[in-house]
Every structure is written in C-alpha cells, then in structure tokens.
Length: 218
Image 1 (tube, one colour):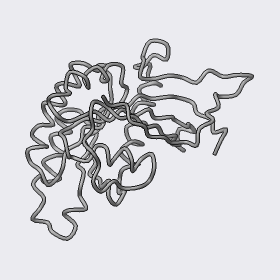
Image 2: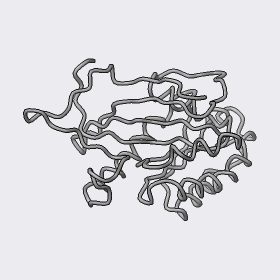
Image 3: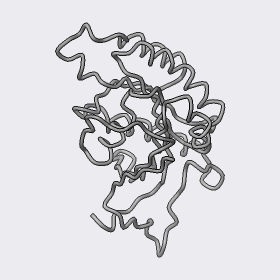
Image 4: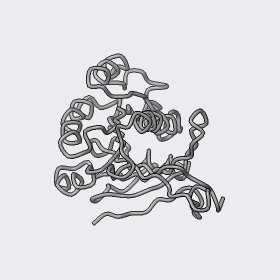
C-alpha cells in the first residue's frame, strides 16, 4: 500500500517483565501473526505501523520500541523511554509477579520518560484463561482499579488471538491526540510526537507497506 499518508508519528515504548508477551504484542500489531516461541529480546526491538483513527480523521504512524524485560538490560532500555509519547505497560494475567512488578516498571517510565506520556496497562494472555479460569492470577477488577488509581488506561488482550491488541494502541493514540489538541504535546519540542511536514498542501507520504519489524538488539 505505497503512498499512504500520515499526519503524526508517535513514539511508543513497550515495557514489562520478560516473558509477558511484549514482543508477541508488537508482532501481532505489525504483522498480524503470533509468535509462539519468540527469542528473548536483547536490548530493544523496533516495529512500525500505520493506524487510522476515524473519528479524528487522522492517520498515525506508530514507532514502537519493544524493550527487554530483564534487569541486565535495564540501563539500556531506559534510554529508549526518553521522548516517548505512549507506553504499553504489559503484564501476564496468569502471573501475579509480573503484575506486582509493573509498579517498578511504571516508576521507571515516569522517571525517565516524558511526564505527559500516555500509559496503558495491558493484561496479556487472556486466551490462557478462556478454557481454564483457574490459571488467572490477576483479577480484571484489581488491575482496572490500580490503573485508575495511577491514571493509566487499561485493557486485557491476547497476542495469540489478537483480541484487543489494535484496540490498546488505538486507545493510547486517541489519548495522545487529545493531548495534542490541548497543547500538552508541542509538535516542535516533544520528540515523541512528530507532525508530518506538508508538501504542496499534502501530508507526508510514507512509501512503506504500512508496517515493519526489525531487531535493534545488542
């Protein structure tokens, strides 16, 4: 689909414990497929995607940085937080520890990222609970309440089935676009928000196919 126009480029980070499905969520977003056994992320991985927000009449290009969830890479991944406009804070609904650790990841993001960043808490792997409710360790209501207390958006999703993956990114994008309208994000000074530069009255043209995913790990 060459020649797709976009209005904004938004920088997103995806953070959370190792093995909660961050890479799988990114691949589901960009390639619409599921990684059954992804290799551990070393450092960061990158993917991009064009999405349309119909009610805003906007096409947004997401630049997503999937960060490693292990402590040994924490100093590296922190550098990618800077300038991000959006964040997916991911935990595994079948792992209470990953939910508890989300507090530490959120503190990290708030220390190193833009103070106006939009963060959405994503409970991944709901597919594992579909046929076996006993596997769930984090009740929806508990996660939703914590998200509300922290001023986060919230959704439960499944990288395997694809449920709510696009919706998570779209919800965060809507919130960022609202902040842009209110002047919270400045097009010239906020590195996580880039306005396309019109040429001859047209928005910029992206010659890619709308999505990509590449490894930038070390």
